[in-house]
Image (cartoon, rainbow, N blue to C red; front, side, top):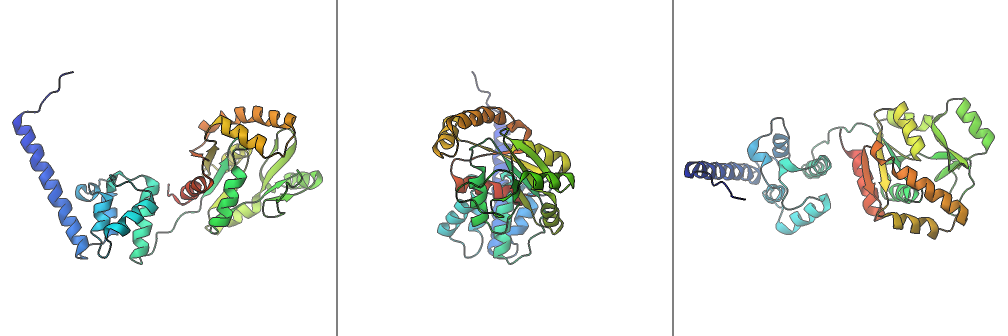
Amino acid sequence: MSRTIPPPVDRLAASRAAVAARRARAVVKRAVATRERTAVSVLDAAWTDPPAEAEAGMRVRDLLMSVPSLGPTRVGRVMDRLRIADSKRVGGLGVRQRVRLREWLADRQNLPRPPEPSRLVVLAGPTAVGKGTVSTYIREKFPDVHLSVSATTRTPRPGEVEGVNYYFVDNASFDRLVAEGEMLEWAVVHNAHRYGTPRRPVEEALGAGRSVLLEIDIQGARQVKAAMPDAVLVFLLPPTWEELVRRLTGRGTETPAEQQRRLETARVELAAQDEFDHRVVNGEVGDAAAEVVDLMATRA
């Protein structure tokens, strides 16, 4: 395929525009370095509509390097922690990256953070994908997250604690909670046991301005979305189908017949992922948990 070469006058104009853009970015960096401007003000200018071209066109690394007392080593560590690639420009950052970068700089400047709206985030996925493992990791490593505790009619598994992992109730108690409208959602899972989310603790936490994470099954996620349309649905995926099978058969908590029934259910459940707002792959538990927590902090 032949390549069209722009006429010399166009190349000259493009070259002059590039020089002008570099000079404009240099003025911004100098203003930050001399404390005439803050790095946060540069972000705000880059993310307005329409964006300021010089600010939006800056590389994030160049902006951080212009901040007094930040050297190359520390900037590299900050970029890694915020999960921002060296090539990223300020205007090209994703929503979660913008939140992380602005909050880091605001904390450094002792600026008050803008208030975050409370969010109801629902984590669901196929059986044996590791929803409980991810939610337990979040409970232990991110204590500020309000993790809703579900009620269930099944018996506790080894290591599960009443009121921490689940509220374990009998069928009569579950019936009463449903009849009195005390369940935000509930469902029969694997044709065996009922699971449900007590409504009152969720509503109280949201009313107090706290974000809430629900770790529930796919049927329950659908009910929550119908009852609370602003809820954010997150689908937890296995790295591969083979890994899902390994996790299910390896935990040894079900009979072979039960394992086969759960695998058949998992195939159906995986087909529901397009109904969800976000997908998170549970390869490494810590990475998946951090991504879910990021979604809770992301402003709409």
